[in-house]
Length: 120
Image 1 (cartoon, rainbow, N blue to C red):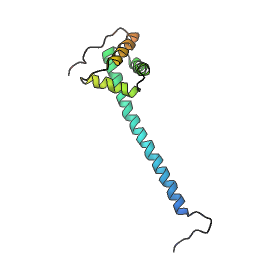
Image 2: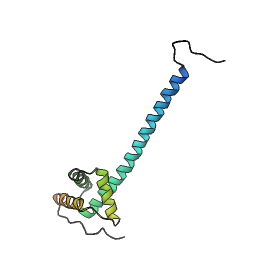
Image 3: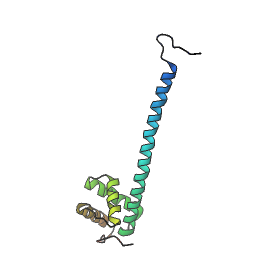
Image 4: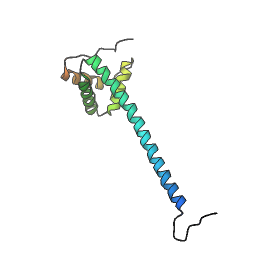
């Protein structure tokens, strides 16, 4: 038995399917954003850990240093954190970021970043 919509009425199955499809799309976007946030949080936490170890600051101070460097360099915080992690794995830290990082760390306690991160 097939149900037919009366003239002037929406097909109930079509409306429900469209709403469900829109909801699925919205949830998929939210899941993607949450995954990105979790990955970003891990990168930031690792960079803070490096600042704690190398700059002899507390984790809260490490967060503030990272935040300030990001703001003054006009670079997203996650990107600054990634630069610090790359530098920690033997990469380079751009000069302007390095200067900002050293200056900011100096305000939280006397420190000088090593030329190279500790070798493993």
